[in-house]
Length: 349
Image (cartoon, rainbow, N blue to C red; front, side, top):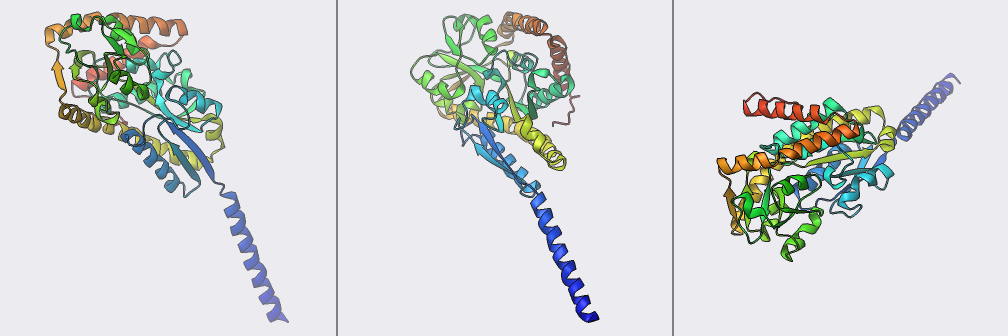
């Protein structure tokens, strides 16, 4: 009788253990996120986003699964941010400039500051966000930010050596970069990157502004002839990776911590990737027979003087919106000075 009772107790204990295991498994809820991007599937930034998605799934032990949609298959380039806010997608990566006027303070990265490379641009862009915590991005959960290397003017058919050569040219440029193009004497034209190839091919525009990587990443080297490399006024463009705030809040705290760790790693990866593909884009363009035109020091000084109103406009617009644009610009210039003097250190490098 006692033996039967002992066996019964063991059976009960085992049954209870299985129940607890089952309860534990039931509690390990899984989350599926949709991730929208305008970059084509073959682009390095799309590949990095896909790797991020895989890393999140692996390091959360399958609790979070990410379905990545590149090439505007879920939302158009200029609709990605609003799509995340509204819940059309749970996550998104696109360009801040595609929603012009919505991100006044963060527009500082897009100014012609003389950006040296993607690693610096990405690092300082994240630092600016950390320091100023702008309300303009508060309707989403920011995963991380990144920004490309030096952006130049590229033209089809006509070489440009002086500002006079830019007069009469119609140049595609995103958002506030149009102010720089206007001050240099050209006519700005706005359109998302996915529309540019055909616009150049058909002669709708005479040129465009973008970093060297675009010659390969978007095949633009096939439809332009010249790169006008004026490093003194090189701009960058900032990109966001954000998540719907409600979706973020639904995730367990340990899962959030894991994703935040991955975010820091991937911001660095994106910065490095921009520089790698800039070199590849330069090579691609040269293989197509393109010519890189350097702007001499004296002429470059004229370009620098001409674009000064761009910074005044930025500061004034930020003031009107009640954001500290002047301080953000001063911070960026200080970090640029640190970089040029060899004293630039950042957690995003």
